[in-house]
Image 1 (tube, one colour):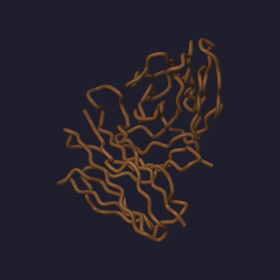
Image 2 (cartoon, helix red, strand yellow):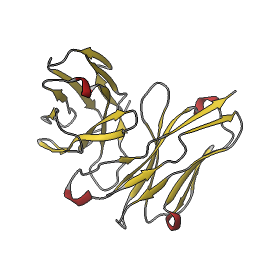
Image 3 (cartoon, chains in turn cyan, green):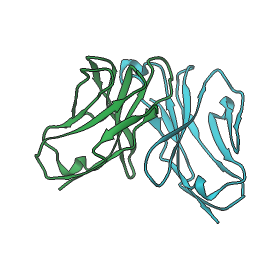
Length: 119
Length: 113
């Protein structure tokens, strides 16, 4: 079975601070895919990034960056120079190909980290 | 605009009154799925569909039905809603294939009294 742990339940920062959201995953599959989603106060889930298990290259997109380390089963997300608009719940998620023949495409989500950025 | 739409966005109903939450996507995605989000339990998959007329159970299918008669639509049916189905529901879609990113609808907040 797959598991995703986001140990930080809530994080509070002041605008312009950098913040890192932690994600640790568990799976026995050698092929898997990791995702980050953002859930702003309006409630929708917004896709941020996808990473497959064979690509450990870190990625940067504007103020966002992701650090994928297979050795520690982690896929951490850093926001540089945080802004009030970054306030949201952030979810890390994992999927494996045809998980045991059931629940194809199922995303296993972590519990989420509530990020509050104060002005 | 590429999107997943859900209707209604908010619904308050009573126990036992059949309801349908619609989901539609305009991205020609083969794969569609329903999740529910509950405090302390996170997001859990209810049903999914790999293509037209192909549906299967997720982790928490009890009390729900789905159908996939057209590629773009994947309605969620609660034949006899109960208070434990009070939740925030999300529809998602993606292209078929390993690890494809799924795009979510805006959510439907359902309250069953």
